[in-house]
Amino acid sequence: MKKLFFLIVILSIIAILFLLSDNTAYARAFNNDFETGDLTDWEEKTGDAFDFQPTYGDNPTARNRGQPSNHQGDWWLGLAERYQGPDKGAKLGQNPGDMQQDANGNVAPDAPQGTLTSIKFEIVGVTMNFLIGGGNRAWGTAEPCCVNLVINGKVERTITGESHETMKRKEWDVSDLKGKIAQLVVVDSSSGGWGHPNFDDVHQANASGKNIPWDQILAVDARGKLAVSWAQMKKYYK
Image (cartoon, rainbow, N blue to C red):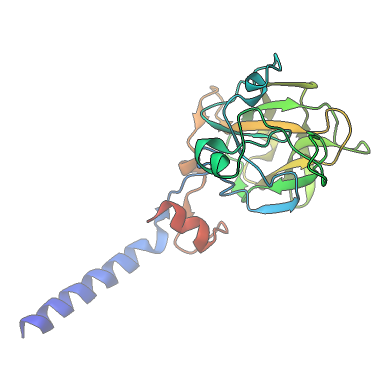
């Protein structure tokens, strides 16, 4: 009898939670600064440019480049770099300051090419800000190396570095795009000089310039209005 009673209570609780969840928003984070040490949330990858990304630490300084990366945290996208940190990198025989290689194993920081696309997110801010560096090869040229904001397959915003490894904080005005669903695409389509972008720490900000937490932006309701895979969800709900 007691077992039956507890079973009824448990089923009732489950039913109530199900009904309450009908319009409940579930917050999740976004790997906007690559601090997971991998490409979680940046899972659509082409080519080989991102095979050793994100990179760890100030690698340009480690090889005495004279152009510090100015990255946030520990991890960032540096498409000329080939060092994945003291754990994974060490196991692979990598060292701080190591650079990309060509198919023959020769140092070739600009050789690899490819693209990396983020998960979808809603534009809720007035601006988007981020750290950007690397080559100055604009979208629309023969061999672009840039970061694009894409909506429905159309590039709405784009930016490049200034042919310098040191990343700078830049921003886009996205006020006219509010409410639209977008993705970020990091593009490396050049193997020539300065044929790589650097990128890190992307945010949306409100009218006062305050960054909006990504877990607010990526609130996903129980019916899944924003497409979030189970693989992505379980990363944050263990």
